[in-house]
Image (tube, rainbow, N blue to C red; front, side, top):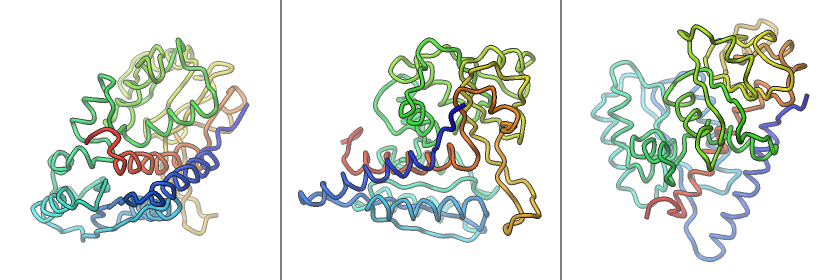
Length: 292
């Protein structure tokens, strides 16, 4: 069993990005600029945005954080999105999800200029990804693809099961694993209502678990030599930790890992790669790689 170290891989990629940014600026080019909008004080979102700011520093990017209280109006938020769309210095920006209930998330996503949508959630980017055109790919699926590539994990012709069908991970992951230039795999998507979920998993060469249920994937669902990618990050109460909780994956790591050829830990697997992929997208936005 080989552990897939997302933390070390992400650190290496950030070094590569920083070297490229240094080179761009030495030639008189523009410093990439990532902005983030954060609404409210959700613990997970706070941590995530803080890590994004640190990652920007490591990559040599300029970063801006715009904060709003939970009660911000949809109108004010959309107005800020428009300002960022129009700001020539901002190459890419994200609106941290989830948003409060009174705000229409989809409306906000669609208001973002797709050329600055480094989260890859805008319908233009989602549509282009689905048919294999250059675009911003959402950060978690891009991070997973990068890990598979960096660890030289064979995906072509393999049977891949994606657990979960969210717009952020499950759906784009399945699309990418199916496409010739990325996964080139035979893909099955399972979810909470799939009748033959366990049987599908037992036949899979690669399992990508993004179902949001701690310890959902157990040893009896995994065949010998499978590759298991755990996207789950649920906060589980843990009195032994200073924070009072620990991050728990969708995979029962201790019993599943001995059967795997490769497996990602939680934390330290997919998580660091998500932020690192956002940095890759921001660099691409700064270079106008996909959209002029």
